[in-house]
Image 1: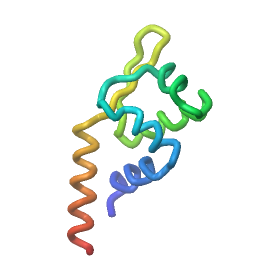
Image 2: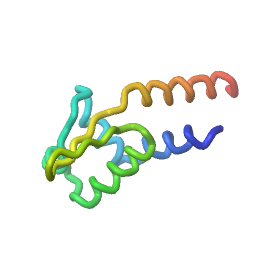
Image 3: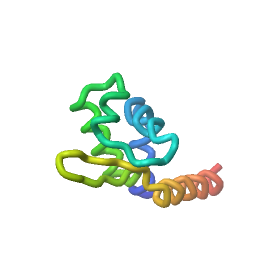
Length: 92
């Protein structure tokens, strides 16, 4: 399995990261302050998990003034799911 796919799978495997990803169910951009407010996780935990999700290519980040906004990278997510699907079809 390639490294890119491993990073993707690691990012979606964490329960905290799954909760954060599920908060984007409508696919729209969300401010970090809203993610913190709507979560039972602390600010530092959210920040660490968002960094992991961004590095894995699941979220895009945009800063506006003091606020940071995040949104799903739909193209990248679909590409990784397709890559995983191809891998699983080939091996199993």
